[in-house]
Image (cartoon, rainbow, N blue to C red; front, top):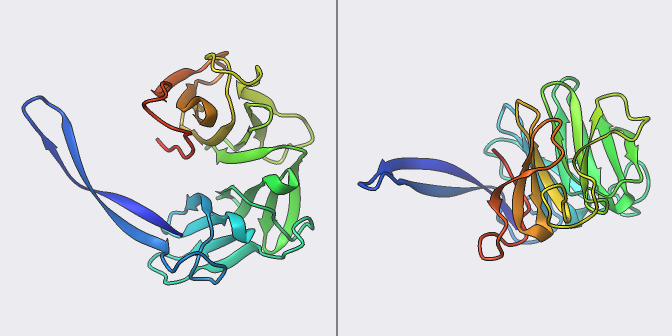
Length: 235
């Protein structure tokens, strides 16, 4: 199990004006087989890359978050890894992670425990309870977005204000393939205009929901022969 980084090598233009991309993959984490040692991963899920190119990884089957410094040969333990799984200092199959740049706290989707948690200097806090979370995102205005695969929706909370149900910003109309529906939303991305991009797993498509929209727009896939069980998305 490993994580890779892709970088653009070159772009060429042919007579039909089609872009051609050549890409080289560089292994930046893992590559030492499946396992629980600090130079290994076991089903890495969501990642977050900070301004120093350090990579935070939700290491799903190891029930932990690890940080790989830029050019490191092994990771550093950040959160979880205690095997009882349901205590505050434990995780159960973490799927995604983001970092609050204001206080450098780590926010984790912990679906096995049906919660979103914050880790700050080894202190833990539950932000959102009873949610079948999968993906996380933050925008520049201080809002936290969480996908809920069971309710087929994405909700938004103002950072620091979690004693409410949040606001539905995508889906929320039951599972289905209509433009106002999602079917097992996984990872999400929020752009500078607060538009939400959603990997709509069972619909094999990526949706874009503009701020305040009542339905989304298909931006990739949607037909079974185009994408299959979409997960990660970045713009």
